[in-house]
Image 1 (cartoon, rainbow, N blue to C red):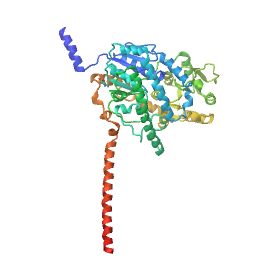
Image 2: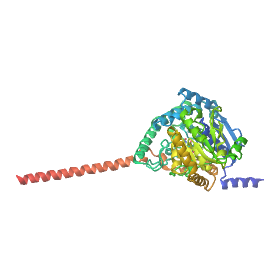
Image 3: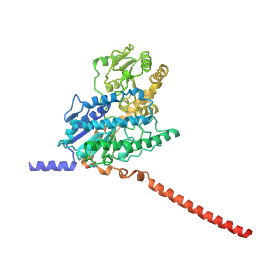
Amino acid sequence: MNNIVKCLVLFSVFTQNVLGLKILVLFPLPARSHYNLGVQLAKGLTQFGHEVTIVAAFSEPKPPKGFKEIYLPELVEMRENSDNEMGKVNMFEMENINPIFQVLFLNHAGALWTDLVFNHTKVQALLKSNEHFDVVILEQFLNDAHKYFAYHFNAPLVLFSTVGANAWVNNFVGNPEPASYIPNVFLSYYQEMTFLERMWNFIFGIIFELNSQLYFYPKQNEILHKYIPDAPHINELNYNISLLLLNSHESINQAVPNVPNMVNIGGYHVDPPKELPRDLKEFMDNAKDGVIYFSMGSNLVPSMMPKDKKEAIMKVLGSRKEKVLWKWDDKNLKVPSNFFVSNWFPQQAILSHPNCKLFITHGGLLSTTETVYLGVPVLAFPIFGDQKLNAARASSLGFGKSLPFSTINEHNLAGTLNELLENPKYHQNAKIRSQLLHDRPVKPIDLANYWIEYVVRYKGANHLRVAAVNLPFYKYHMLDVIGAVLGGLVLIAYLLSKLCCRRKASAKSQSKEKGE
Ligand SMILES: *[C@@H]1O[C@H](CO)[C@@H](O)[C@H](O)[C@H]1NC(C)=O
């Protein structure tokens, strides 16, 4: 008996095995697409024997073993109410909004839901409870104050970035983001930029950073201290990151530097169901000329689409030989005979059907990841946030085309569809991208689990952090050294000029003397 216990102790010491962690996953953003990422991660982690508690605004109908919820449905309602206050933003109208206004809009939205989450009674109860967690995973999305949860539970903080490596997270782990070849997440550039694009990327990056440092983080700090007066300052929490999980991969996103505690797990959330619902399956099986799948994601309300655009798109799609899956929130909409309308589609199952020929999308990163994973070309109508960037990448990488929403008309849409559906190169490129996304040493969810256990095993894994996180801005950018060098040069120039002048002056006075 004693020996068995000894053996077990030795076993766990030698393998440093983490047997069943208690993990807190915070994905409180009241947006379905973000939740999908959170719940797939949480469910994925339960497979490894961990007990995972997810804080979210949605609920999982089929929770696996070890999956717990702190379900905050009120957040969705509150968000809708506050949208009303803001005059019900029609996202379709945000397309040509200057990125600076997008940043200002998100300032407001971020502060709002950060506050709503802290204010929720179930969250208050969690903070007052005696719960223990080994690690906290937080979706970083304009909610920096929520990093406090890791501090509260005295657990390493794992950040999750929905939109890959970008200006929202790079600073926190000291990851470089040169404006010369990495476009800001709000701009629609690809890695090769013209002089003017680089200039705007550079200036916009500075504006973005100033907004973060002078407005956004102080505001987050204020919200945090409103609820937890003795919490550390937001800057202490922001730069104390053990691991940064990125919902991205080089097959979809451009290749960028990653410091050692950044791990790409893009694609982990794709898990298509085996079967389509019967009516959909029949529709797709019988589509001899293929199926075009049209969906503008979960945040855009389809019926708010401007009428002329809707009519143009329906007319062009209605005249094609392919069948069309049309995601729309109004069932009474009159549609052409080759359409199948629904307000919800099992997107991954549709994209994995062999007859799916094209995905018409807003270009959100989830949709883009799923389409790349399943090897279907895209036509993107990008509107907001990172959609333009993703669409620009799809065009540059040759697995799709991008048509700015406001420019759509029957003529250019028909032409673009012809090109995408008749020229086999888009399909081939989509397949190559898919292959690249699959060709990796371990499955992305295994990778995520490995690194999460790793940072628990090594108590936050401080050794993975680059020293940049401890440097103030001026030191990181060597402003003091540049200043000193420039100052030195100016001083030398000054001394030289003095010397010259004195020589000249003395030469002059000598020549004067001679002349006289
Ligand atoms: C920083 O993280 C470590 C664990 O990784 C934790 O013990 C510490 O309390 C954290 N400090 C702050 C200020 O968040």
